[in-house]
Image (cartoon, rainbow, N blue to C red):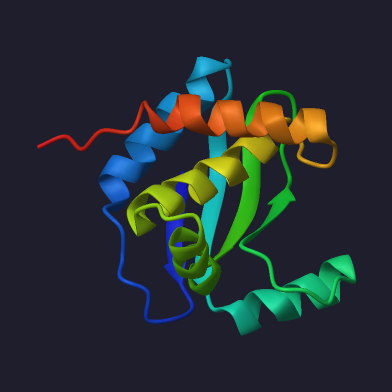
Length: 139
């Protein structure tokens, strides 16, 4: 089950197409999504979570809490829509593309991909690009 929750006035996404895409991404590497909650929120909301749970005093675009076990993906993924908007402007990309990148970034964390080292970051970017190519809107 994949759920989308909104803690701010962010425009809701097309949940059906995103669910289909995320399930497809997970299945590429033989994973199944058991329960996945995406929470779209403000910078300040995510900063509080970052301070409370990770002891970091910085803004971030995403925080992933992983409750997965043996190919059964489960987690909470918090996304700052403020950061998504700002990062899209900084990197001169479409906001919807940046949002998809961040959404799949969280899922990739649940699938075991990290981003602490340079090698991990490079692999994460490759996987993000690969998985974003799988997104398509069905009419």
